[in-house]
Image (cartoon, rainbow, N blue to C red; front, top):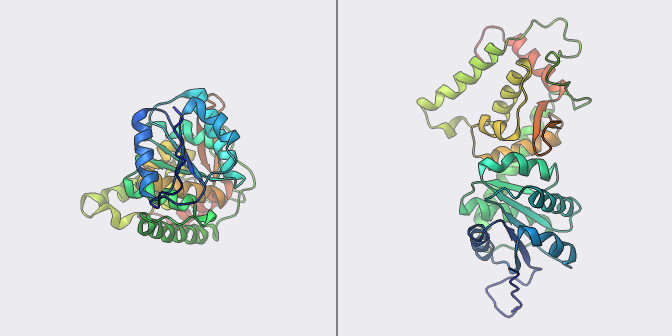
Length: 307
């Protein structure tokens, strides 16, 4: 159903170009509608997934496209997400996609590395903040969500600075890891390094998780390091790691983990790799230079527990 809201005299809404909503169900549509209204923006159209692509292609201007997904619509959903990702990547509009955790893998695969805010099982504050972040480059004034937006913007700046510090000690991506059936990648010029056991890395991960039994988990949140360790352990064990599994390994809310993942990929520390057997899933791997740096770290660390 296409519901147009033509009344621009209502002072409760922004005079910016409208937000288009595409949703997979009426319940999903209602959630998106509440978020847009709370942000003080005007809703241009409310569309089911199967009708959204045609409308987006005809739309002259839009502040943002909000896609609310609670059911896997397979090909129709993937096609829409590809279009939304392209539009966002070319800065034609901002885009936010909201999904439950069980649909992270197919949605992340369809969006690729485009500049889309992907949120997972998000709270109202996180949803408002995602819209504020997505529209920040359009200089869109958001009234209700200003506080959440400011906090998220500060955190994203901090995230970028932290990842930059990690990246300054690791080489940028030059080539991706080989297939899972091949031996784990050996670091360049790494003949002087002793073999690294997956058990050692797993023991470090277990030690990090153990802290939450005695202290609040948020005291030790370090998603970049947790994801680095998880991918190193997987590489040694010849395992592939999908996006959803890496989000769990980060030990932070999935939306936060996805932002870290996007930044780590953009910095060349991680590599996204399409699943050759499932076009709706992507794997994440360490860049070779990242693997080398981690192995040298463990070699210098020796028997000391790195928690």
